[in-house]
Length: 439
Image (cartoon, rainbow, N blue to C red; front, side):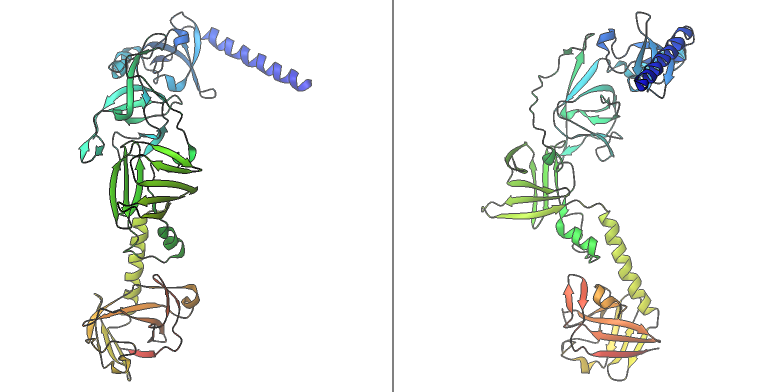
């Protein structure tokens, strides 16, 4: 009971404070603002101007005077920043061309962007049927589809939660409103309840082969296979579906979907069924013209793929450079002389004891040396890395585990080593070991 009395007392004091402020601020106008959103209950339309008396950052409202001379509270996002009266006309002019213009969204997931560019950052995703305020027209490049620009314009918009951004009008139904907030003109909105959280989780995202995630998580990076050119995207805004991987390079017009099972969706007039497995993992079942289906596992990648590839390329270059920095000539009394330069060129003479068990009999003495493979956990404690030699006259690479120790370079043939992609996970059973003096 005591708690209720305290709360009631606090509310009374709060109301008294507000009334005191409102009664004392009659002629203390802090500025004038333009209304950005209709207030039918106050018989006020967007574009109207009002005097502003108070700004409350706590309750996020302005106290303004309506047309009847009454003090009312309006959320901050519904009004422009208050300005002096002599600047009000120029501020009002910004919104004049789109006064009373609103729009309903035609598709689900339509992006609202930070700039009037289709590649700009998304600040909001609009829902199908959502109503937004058109503030003013902007200049920007139209989104492309099929090599042609979409019809429409970029508009600065205001969502009902106060979010502002840029939206292209191709998928907007623009109309005007009257003093009651009623719709005037525009297309007839036919809104179907097609909201599906699992389907929504698959659109407007770039999906990559699941092998990418395995490569990145294990460090087993193959720059030739880890490419941003292999992807799947379903983009309702551009009304396009694109699949580029597994020898498939197709783009279709997106016309919606039919739910065919639990978390399973058939794209209309497109030979793809999408299956939502879990967050960040889906399956695209693609059926080619011969009727043969294939399932492609797709994942979201939360790192920059190009940066991962660049980092791996740098690792390889630095690893090779470290070996060459020891010296250009490596000499073995049994296995010949190996010269390597910083550009990857090598010359290896008198390696006949390695033929044909390690090096092909067709191999010439020259070729290219580089770092391609990385070491798995089981072998990384005993070796520094893997050197790959491609001899002129052959098309088969020759790999050696290597160790730099006490001013010497030790090579161990990896012909029968165990490979997992670009990782060497176990050494050969009975390898040939070469010890080079560095000159």
